[in-house]
Image (cartoon, rainbow, N blue to C red; front, top):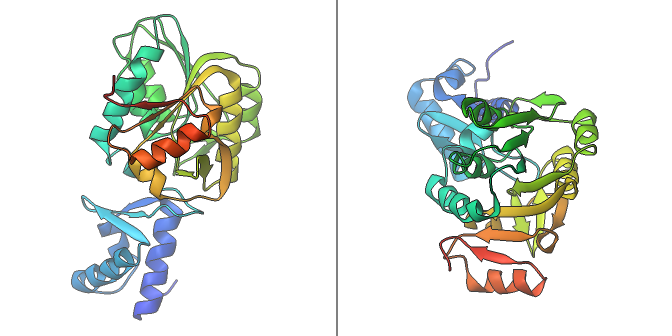
Length: 259
């Protein structure tokens, strides 16, 4: 297959490659375009300026849009302190002996990591990184949700996952969101939105942990209303107007670090 030569062809090829793989090394892109490193740098700069890709520590990742989500690997490297604060605010809702169901989010990963000292938890998840956390904790049990593996999201989805959820009743579920718009949670992928909605209804209690950036994004498929969760945990400095709007919808808003 001939390599793209002109600028438009190169940038289209780069975009398609990144979207397909989620997150790639800059060196990988050098292999698909016949240009100098400086020309590739200019192409990446153009795509980044157009909010098509992000660059971070030598990797190129597709920007989340209404129709796409960034890779799990990329999300694990961003908003680390903010997610840790939300995780600490989640701790009071989990106690010894509980079954804890999580989605595939990097925020849920942070929340589970923050529970490491609580014994006798049963972690239930479709996410492989969260599964590994549970495997490494000798005081925890693990139930993995099966289904088709999505390499980009590092998690299992599909009818098998939905069916397995339907036969469970967890004590508590921990979620995040790709986007929260006008008090409603959305996700770019229909199958993930369906999974998250089923997951929420599977648990006795459910908590939505959302970094501030998610309130400035949009996505296509509805998951649930913020008021459908038992608690919506947000950053302490979230815009008071957004908090008021959530509370007006009936959401129980918990500020991380708040009293």
